Image (cartoon, rainbow, N blue to C red; front, side):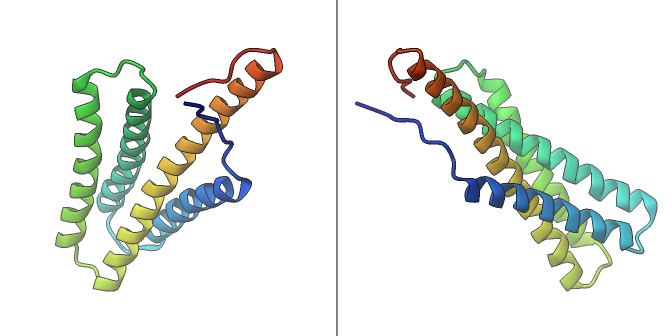
Length: 147
C-alpha cells in the first residue's frame, strides 16, 4: 500500500499557530488585567503551562506509537492523566472562583483554544519534519517512507 507523505498546508500551519498564540495571549491578558490575588493568578498560569506541556506530550506519545516508536505504557498513561488533571484543575478552579460566569467561560474557552493550538502546532512540526525527510530520501533515489 502506497502511503504518501503530505506536507501540511500553509493555511493549516498558520491557523494552528494563530490558535495557540491567540488562545494563550487572550488567557494571559485576562489574567494580567484581572483583579485576582497574585496566588490565584499563579494558579491559573501554572495550569496553562501544565496543560500545554501535557497536551504536546500526549500528542507526541500517540504519534510515536502510531509510527512504531517505543512508548512505555506508564508514560503514555501519565500523559493522559496529566492532560485530564490539568483540565480538571482548571474546571475546579473556575467552578469555585468568585468570577462572573462570562469571565469563567472566557478563561475556559481561551484555555481550550490554547490546548488545541499546541497539539496542532506539534502535529505540523512533526509532519513537516517527516515530509522533509521523505523528500530528501526521494531526492537521493531511495524508496518513499511508509508510516
